[in-house]
Structure formats: structure tokens, C-alpha cells
Image 1 (cartoon, rainbow, N blue to C red):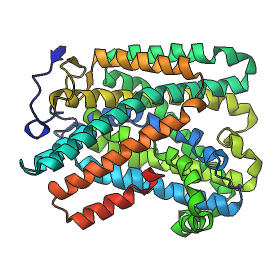
Image 2 (cartoon, helix red, strand yellow; image 1 turned 135 degrees about the horizontal axis):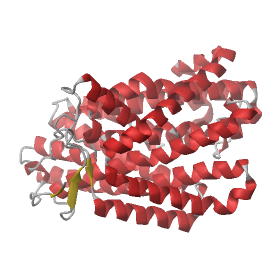
Image 3 (tube, rainbow, N blue to C red; image 1 turned 30 degrees about the vertical axis):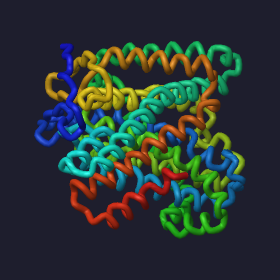
Image 4 (cartoon, helix red, strand yellow; image 1 turned 90 degrees about the vertical axis):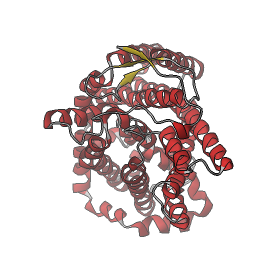
Length: 437
């Protein structure tokens, strides 16, 4: 059914996002909870789940000047391991996901909670919160337009590398895939999750198995869990380490979408999926890639696809392509949630919002936003023509959005959770270090 949102209130303090009854999965029956976990796999984790395709490779080829020596590989893996652990697990899954606004997540939920904590005082602080919210919303919209273009073109370009004659069809095929994805949105995130969930389940299992296979050949790579290796790399490289950090941060892209999608599937299903499958699969794969680079530094430019024997590369390319398409879903879904909150807070005009689930009111579809996003994505694909041309803008949008989340979360910790301000600033400031790269 299509429903129009009520007239927006005058300020964030006087409003809350629509409740996502049952969306946090606390009272869902076993079958429904399992369905939410599977749906979260298909919708929430696509973005961060495709990072192994390029994150470690770009760290050594992105102008960092680092050679793929065992010491450098262990140092990079150590930094990457702790970036994923601190940024995604601690910062988002453990801390920021506590800050839900009636089940909804995202930058506007943080802004609403922070404003409410002011209790009508400190008008200047209220203005700062509003400005941060608008900046964060704009950055997330930018991310939502860039991510589908980058991920899908990058996947199709991978197929082109396997068959050079396919090169002229990269842009047209990317457009066909993307347009089809946006038309699929009207079916709702529950249906999309049911379609994509099994694919991503296979994807994360394959990531973990391939990584574990290589780790078994060189288990010494697990020494990189020790943060000393990362600290030694930072000390050796000095300011030059920021070139490597700029690529390592690609391993955590999608964390902000994970939080923004909380209203669709709930905190508990997302946490179960992340801790039970997604994080282990990702880290095993990164360490497996590291083990392979230590054994043969020449594979660094194609390390992900080198994880499998030559006869299975095309199979992995096909699975990677599906995963890259699914990666676009995480940010699209997050935009629907944030747009509804923006309407209720008076930042955007009223629009028709269709609820696509009878049991989880957080699952919604906004037709106007969907088609605007599609137009922006199509324009980027046609205008830039390759994923590499968009890479810089991609990193800027993602890290900018995560920095805004950290700033607002600090305010929520002080104003709502009643943390002492030195503790809040210290904790979220420390957790924001990877974003600053």
C-alpha cells in the first residue's frame, strides 16, 4: 500500500522516525528471525562483502610505494584486521547501532537522538547537529549513486579482462544490470533479500574457504593479528602510510550502509549475520590473500582471482559479478530509510512511501527516490565509463559519511548515554582514525 507521510514537524527534537515494529528481531519467531538474517545477508552486507575484490590489491598498487615484502604484507594485514574490528565491529555493530530511533538507523537517527538530548537548550549546538545531519545525508546520497556504478562496472570490467572482445559492451551491459536492479526495488527488500540472500551466503562461505585454504599453506600469516606489526609499519612509513590507509579504508566501505539499513532488518539479525558469517569470511579471505602474496609477490595485481586454480577463475568471476550487483542494494535500501526520516524531520518534501512488508514496517519503497537514484547512476556510468575513474569520489563519500556518524555518535554518547565528554571524544575519536585516512 502507498502511504503519504504526515506533515513534517518543525525540528528534529519534536519528531521520531516511524517505528519499525518487530524490525529489531527481538520478538520474531525462529523462522521469521532466520528470514531476517538471510535478508540482511542479501541486502545489508553486499557493499562491504565485495571489498576483498580490490582492497588488498589497491593497498600495494595505489601509489603507496610499498613493496610486497613479508614484513609489509603482515603490517598491512594487521592494520586491515584492526580497521575492520574497530570501525565495523566496535564502532558500528557494538556502539552506534545502540543508537536507534524507534528501530531506524542512519545519520538522521543519530541527529534526532542528539537533538532530543539537548532538552531544548543550546541553540548553537542544535544548529551544529542540523548541519552535520544535512552533510551526512548528502554524502550518503552521493555514496548511494556512486556505489552501484563502481561495483557493477568493476564486476563487468572483470569479465572484460577474461575476454577482451567483450570490452565495447562493458558500459551497455552495466546499464542493463543497473536498470534491472532499480526496477526490482518495487518488490520490496523482503523479496529482494530472499533473492539475494542465498547468493551472498554462498559468497561469504566461498570467501572463507578460499582464504582458509591459503592460510593452511602459510599459517604464519596469522601473526598479523598482533597489532605490533601494524604499528611497526606505521613507524617505518611515517606520513607515507596514509597512501596505504586510503586503500585499506576500502575494506570498511559499507559500514555506514549497515547502520542505515537497520530499520529494514533490525539490530539483532544484522549483528548475528556480521559476527557469525560476514566478518569471519572477510578476514579469512584477506589473510588468505596475504599468505598468497607472501609466497608469490607477483600475484599482487590479481591476488583475489589467484586464490583459485585457473580452471575455476570464470566461476569465481561469475560469482563475484553477482555479489558486486548485490552490493548496490545495501546503499539503495539505506537511502529509502534515510529519506523517510528526512521527510519526517522536515529536510525533504512529502513523498508517497509504500510499505512492502506486513510484519516489518521499516521495509519501505519510495518510487520517486528510486528513479532519481537510477537517473544519477546511469549518468555516472555513461559519463565516466569506468570504475577507476570513480574510485576517488567513492572513497571521499564513504569516509566523509563515517566521519559525520562518528561526530554525531559522540554527541549522542554525551547527551543521551550520559558518558563523560572526555570518554566519548576519546572513544569515537580513536575509532574514527581509519576514516581520517
